[in-house]
Length: 130
Image 1: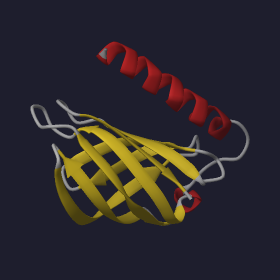
Image 2: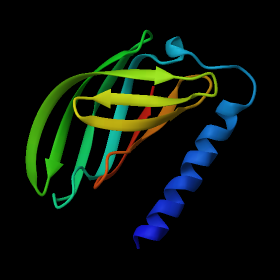
Image 3: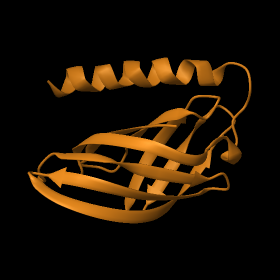
Image 4: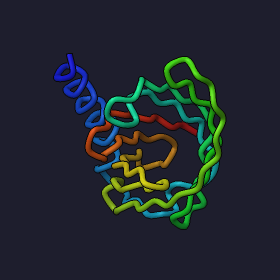
């Protein structure tokens, strides 16, 4: 089951990233403004699944902030956070929020993207769209 989910995720990332890799280059300023965010996964080994919805704000200079509602194993919480991001010319990059690390892919118009958590023992994906 995990293998199918991983293959599906890789196909999704490739579909979103392909247009980003053709034509214009990306930069930090490609991501600017407020984005609706949704995500699902397992935030740490042994923890219950989590679903999130919220708003993520990119400042166009490598900083981000967010506000989200989470349900983790049926428990609801509301959190705010700050972090940083990088974005290379090929529209791929990284996001760091606290101890969490993510790989990022963005469409070349900067209107939507996908994050995948890269820390060992985690399995989490987030989508964001303007």
